[in-house]
Length: 171
Image (cartoon, rainbow, N blue to C red; front, top):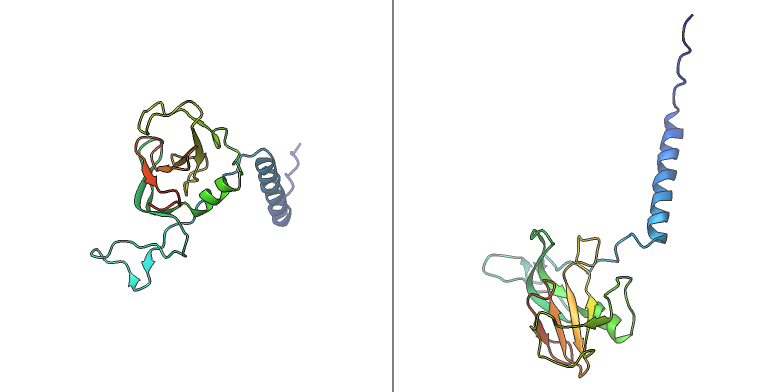
């Protein structure tokens, strides 16, 4: 007695099934907030004068009012470099000014200054905000910390160091 031959799969049906599975996974991921927020734009790799040379430091092509912290190195939790270049904070600062929060639990929450790297102030004085890191799916190490009196600080390394920006967001 011979066993029946398995039916051949139609390649079009297989492609359609794979497409529907990928679509369903994407839908579930988006619905549950598993997808990363839109990443900050990468710094340009050329300047207005052409390709970068070793003698020419990177210069972000910006509009008036843009807030850019130049020449930053961003590392993930394992210490690997995930981004190197200028960091534009314009969209994050506009989001903060508009009172909009991202889906991360600490975005817009009280910053307690446990590291004591900012001037000591009363509890509730500082707020922390997530600045998305290109290439990382979670909140990443970048934060903007704002004070009740209008001061703005940027940290590329999850509170290890801070850059003070003036009240207008300029470094």
